[in-house]
Image (cartoon, rainbow, N blue to C red; front, side):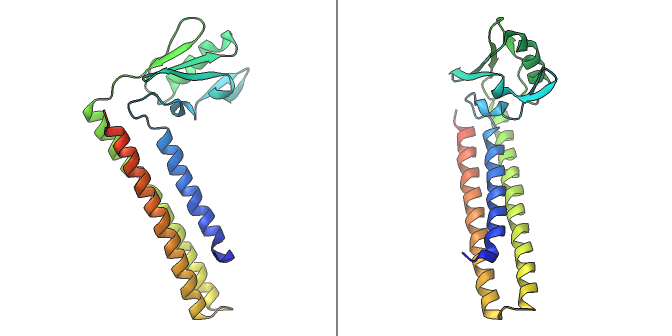
Length: 183
């Protein structure tokens, strides 16, 4: 890989990782603790990630259990969950908070698959924009210090990189869609 293309590969990799983290937050039938990754809890006046104020477990397929390190945090954690887009009302027994995920309906599964496809398309557009930026930069290089043949080789490498990331995003989209539609 040419060093001049490294920055574009790094940007494409970031776009791929962003899509992957987005997919981790989408629940597919099973309770997935990653749906809580972006949640912040008011911990003595500081917004703190939920994972840092309690233990998160999945005791059953459709239940997430949160055991806060301090009992006084139960109300703050419940408030954060209610304010989030998780869409589940927490229940607590004074010691732990439970989130019971309802079974996904066929209609909801199809909506989630549409969302997954939309996110994949956004990721692929981001990768193509990075390729365009790279090609523009290569054309400017061509006017100064590099031969046309070398520019053509670099453009081919950039295209191969683009194809690889788009293929990987498509594969991840297929896998997530299949996971969502599996009952």
